[in-house]
Image 1 (tube, rainbow, N blue to C red):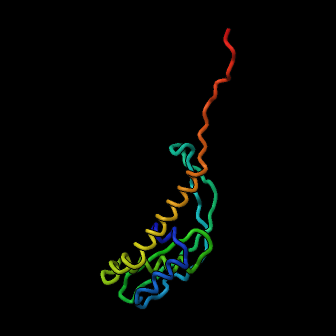
Image 2 (image 1 turned 90 degrees about the vertical axis):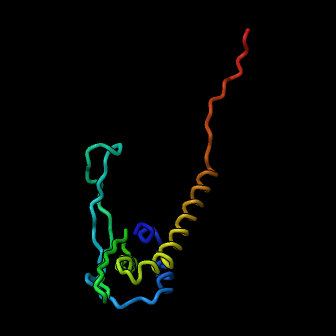
Length: 139
């Protein structure tokens, strides 16, 4: 699910087109809402409310009965719906392996490539700071 959440809508849709999708219905029409973000000072301090973030959510049911839920950060209703559909398909014995092979694996590789490219760009701007000793004359 992390792979889907970090992927772009067009990429998810493109890979899903390679699968003959079963019939499904919306249990919850895609909608936008808010979630409270929690934080901790230093990672181990007392939790506090950091702020709110907009999310889109959806729920679908396959004709075979599997129910999937999808959440996407931001206001992207279609992405939340496709994530919910993928969640339901992953629960189906008929579609789980196909979804992993034709959707999740290619998206995972694409995300890994993006991360490596960003890491390379960040490494290219790395600056090593060191202290230089002034050349003072000794007598």
